[in-house]
Length: 469
Image (cartoon, rainbow, N blue to C red; front, top):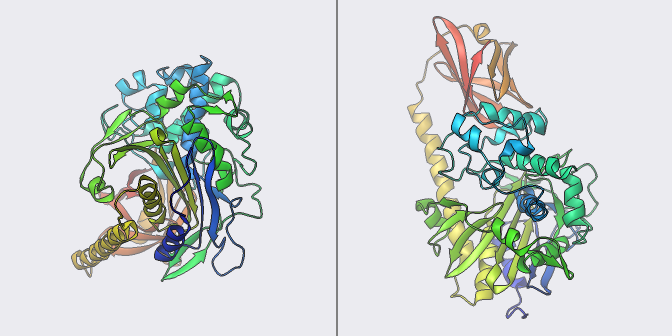
């Protein structure tokens, strides 16, 4: 047990200013106590209500570690095993590759090593339910050979949550409540957005240099991949559970062995140029089960981030030092959580001072410059004066993909419109048979029509080829 050598409040306030973030809640714990717990800044920019320790944020993908903790508790009870075939608990689960389909295990799902790429639009604002999302996995090609690479895949976590539910004979939400939320006394926690408390942070996105508050991403049903909402205060016992090897209040909620298994490397993440740029003091990175794992200045760090529509979360553990923190903030396009968590870790470790705000600020500036250059280059390479091969009416129709469903092209008042899932965008001609869909959520997405034998045979949008019916 120890006290923080330096008050972290000035670092937190400096980070808010540096990144123009309205507000943040921070909790820091050791194995026995909460060392720091406070809100800084505003729930909504331009309004007086302030962030508190009880202000609710979405954890987004930080929910995944809760799901693997539930799996660990079920392994303790021998209701499932980490290497159980997925279909032992989820009969209709399939992958498109025969070898992977025959041998895929529970631990493959939560270690992101099935070979299936993220395909986030299979779940993000999707028009279909979780069961259908899981069913559609069977129609996605493997982008990497089975078990050879980490590819972040949220629908696989939904499948893991469903498998846990079937193994226990209870819905995932009940397992969360009974095994974690209630014993940890996470009193502000919810698993949907159907009834949000008054004291919740509002999401913010920047448009034309101005922060604009938006709406929470709707989670109408509990989602094992990312639907837990809670406050910084709620996270204190969760962090201590991790530091105390699954024990809380004298009760062993999860065995030390199986909890540690979730934080053990299960798939290597190569330290490439991007990793070195973002983590200059890291020599190895890997993924466990709902946790990222790396070294930093000789210490083992276990962490995970979460982001959803204008709100962010970051959780970081140094298990051997019995130190953990969580940062919850209310702006989307920012690296503040990462910069601040690194600064707080450095402060705790008494490491040489390093300006993480500047480090990530330089990266963000470089990325923004590269994006502008890419747009300029695309405009330069655009073939001016071209026209679509066909009359606009000849592109109208329904185009389908076995996983992504139906994309419908319609014509109204001389303009084409593309509708797919919950997204609808007007199509503006770019060049030849290439259009751009202007959608509030998808942005300026290219839509390429493939004309064969004088007919529009297919279109490519959102990175997917849809074949015309």
